[in-house]
Structure formats: structure tokens, C-alpha cells
Length: 206
Figure 1 (tube, helix red, strand yellow):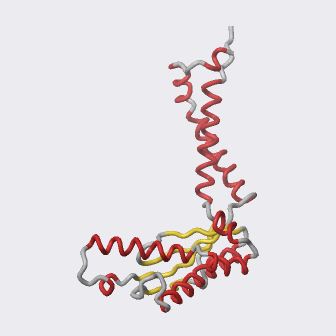
Figure 2: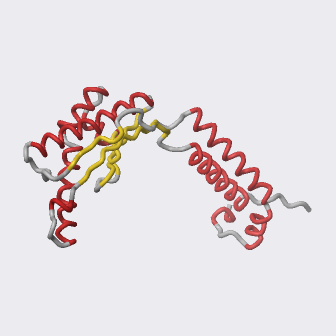
């Protein structure tokens, strides 16, 4: 059993390189296994809603330096993020989905690209229709709450404009693509094949 814990020899590496037919077959088998897993136990669906956020820098800071504008963007973006993840906004999604707010924060909803221009609101679920409803509801609830606080001169700056750009007929797709499953299956199976070639010694004939 000492060979099991020893480093591969040059001969072992040569055997590994010569086994190209084995690698081709292994890649094909691994890809098929990954594809089968995708259809047997598919990943959750992900829906994406979009809200346009315009900070109107020209109006808010017409004569200020780039550094001051940067801090303005950072500060106002943070305020809007707090609104997006607030109990009030997520509570609207919780009523629709039947999930509690903590679950939504931890494993269902995600926010991408919080800056000027499009903010993407994602929702994951096994049911594509439910994922779409949650993403649309979250984006709309955020827009309504942010607009209300801006109108009331609350934390966000009054120059900010919030516009729901896509809250209907949302794009819905698997959170992990079939290609990723195929690649992972091929890579995993090839790794296993490599271990077999390196650590299983061929039988020696007299």
C-alpha cells in the first residue's frame, strides 16, 4: 500500500498522457451525467426585474468636484439599498410568497448593480411563475417606497428619479445553466479518471 501515498512517477504521468481515448470517453460520460442531473434535479429558476435609478448629478451638484459627486453617489446609493432591503419593502414580497422576511433576505432575493442606471432585482424559486411574481413585486415595492420617501423629502435626495423599467413579462431562466452542469460533470469525471490512472497500478505479467 506504500505506492498509494507516494508521488506519481514519470511513468505514471506518461501513462496519464497516453490515455487520451480514456479522457475523451470520460469527458463524454461526465457531460452526459451532468446533463442527466440537470434534468432530474434542476436548479431553481431565477427571474429578473429592472428599475432605472437616475441620480441627476448635473442638477444635484452642478458646480462640485468629481470627488464630491462620488461621495454623493455612494451615500445616496447606500440609502436606496437600505430601502430595497427594508422590512417594509420585503414585507410586501413576504405577503405574496408566504415566506418570512429573513428567508427572503438570506436565500431567495438578490440585488445586482446598485449604482446609477439599471438596478436588477432577482428572485429564485423552483416555480418560474412564483419567481417572476416575487421579482416584480420586490422591484415595484422598492420603487413605490423610494418615490414616497423622495416626495416626502426623506433620506434619498429629491433629485433622484426612480423608474420601474421592467416589472412585467420578466426574463426567467435557470439559476445555473445546462452548460455549467455539463462542464462540471465533465471536469469532475475527468478528475476521477485521473486519480484512477495515477493510483491504480496496471497488473504485471511474468
